Length: 384
Image (cartoon, rainbow, N blue to C red):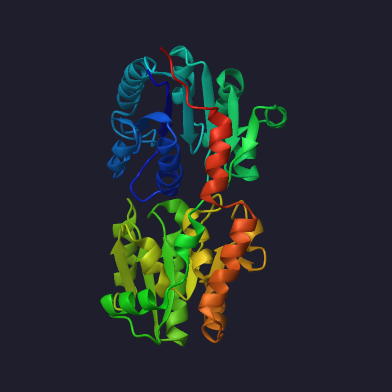
């Protein structure tokens, strides 16, 4: 019987984690690794992951402690997770937990109670700038649970590591950073796709396009982007804002667009499977996230040759250090930067090739991250 690795995460259809998982784990499955996948997403769960292993789904209870039936939902979640862990334990000795925060450390403590030999905690986000006092206290409690029960400590960036792990934990041999690996060459700029999708979305070839790809959640800060774009389009009317993605805040953002009377200039595409094609219409990739590790959508657009305009709150900007970052206290500053870039001329194909080379040299590739995952897991295990 093949020994499987149990993986738990918030796998929503349009999340960066889901994109990372599909891109990297497909290669591992082809090499003989087997997986139990536990999806705790509570918004548009990515059920296509069923193709990569045994699939279980248990929506995470609402994080709002003032929500209706909060404690009952929490008990039900813990009970169901325990049942799934017990079932996965039949074929698995290792559990890999992709987590955004540690305010509720139940996935870790329940994994310990289920007697998994290895408990790998993977810090996949840095929400330290968004947490209130109570959430910070809960996060610190979770850090203690990680130190006590986890056997391996992984982070997507140093900032995410600092959010999850004490410094003494980071000095352990079992700590490592695994960067987000992408299919770099797949993001290459294509002029014909630029023209095709501009025609599809009724955007003139001369129109200056600002784009964004991401889930509509508070951390991505779409509201700030709408305010900035509104100021920009007043001084440069021949422009469009293209928003790719879906999420629980999308209707609020639509309402904001309508209230500003700029609905003719903002395109909501919804969730797309072919983002790497549509992003060819972007001149600028705007990413005013309040906090985030270096996002996959940002890496994709940089490889595609779009000029990034990003917030200075990003937890990792080494790969794009040649580009300026902006504060989030003044939408006019962002509008002015959009205007400055609208006056520039550059060869998009050359820019794309240049940035793809830098991404590959910096290790943001599937081959690098998949290799690191293989080193983390060890060779595929079989038992008689």
